[in-house]
Length: 578
Image (cartoon, rainbow, N blue to C red; front, side):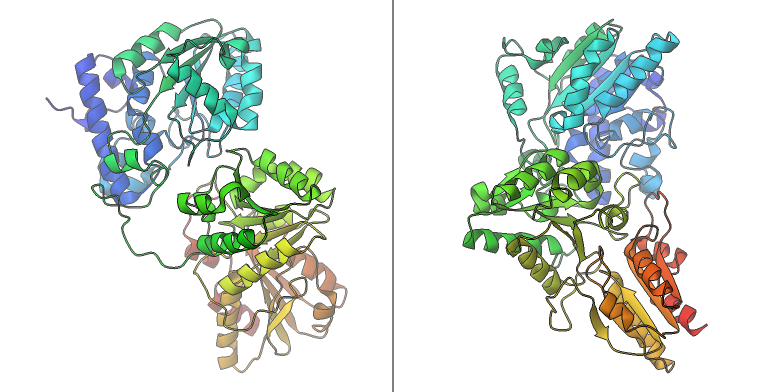
């Protein structure tokens, strides 16, 4: 017996199935997922691990009347398959029709745009309170896993939810993993609950006022359906703790859970990635830090649950030993811990993905900057060449960070400059420094590295026209310069490096220039270009500030985005010629 997945257009289509049909449906959903993920890439382990749980949720509850909030929502693929979007998972021509996260623009079954961790419980408490105020009767379910429960916001909401005194269902998807391994005593406690089949007298959920239900076979539909039916329509807060297998059904994902948390296209049999991969800045960072830590035991590298994103796979973590600190998915804790480490005389370097640094803005400003502590923060995937999902945009970081007093934000243009910035930042003890990892194509230096990083670097000396371009934009500026030289103009090209303070001495040399263009890999509003324009305006110099428009974008094409904002080499050269 086969189930035609094309016939599944809403959860109503599975309500009449018996358990055998539901189990067959789960198998076929998992097979379709593996086929798409191996060809297209995406979050592999999280979705394969919750196939049965998602089927059971939609079998028992009545979405969208019953409201389901998926934490991070990176495990919502099966939810999408059951809610009218199956074509995007079984037809290769339609693979790009859906995002990798819940999106209200796609379906009324998706309540929020979500891409960051630890938000589901707080969102669900708001939905439950709104329901109670309006006299509703629906169930509200928060679905959380992959170590999101250890995030500060999740713990705050976990503490609050039982005080609602009404229906609130929290499904804890316990697969014993974060992106990499779990960190924190909370996960040792979950282990205690698993080992005791949920009977351990030490139970944080009961202590906080929840009714507690444990499902040892979290990939078994019979057990899941029984548990969800038991808690449906409860008039108080309930935790359903399910023990699942991350990557279930794909042997290579089960065996290497960290590698297959998220993956690009891969061979489903061997797990080998499709395509060739060259040098990367993640490895430059990790190898530089390993060398620095080997030579100085007071240097540590920190991450908030994303070791792979900063080049620290399992082997490098083991090499670093106690000098590598992973606090789990808790950016606020990590930033403030870095501040205190610096106060204690240790040299902390936190690697953080640009979009996730937003989550710790207050700590960066309040705990690091006000105290002027020499912690170092290296930002990965910044700018328009980073991740392009609307929930993971990295091009707001310059405007966000460069305007915090006491912090110096540096932007590297190539591997050698990047490495030298890291070494300098770690060895100095004067100020907090944030370093942007170059975006786009991996580049080696084509000139000696000028290590006076707090001053602008003149890369090409010219006259009348200047292009000041940071980070990955410098290569575009140099290409524009080449075009202009062919037209008889000799522009000055400047690599600013320091995005927080202007180099007045360098800019004073541009007095009398006919045109200055600033080019940055981020939004123009609040960026470094406006600082330059404000200073040069006093000298009567006309400045064109080029950067991205301040807007939320989703799954954009980087080349097209450059064109849309007049930031290609050809456009820059043409604007100067005109």
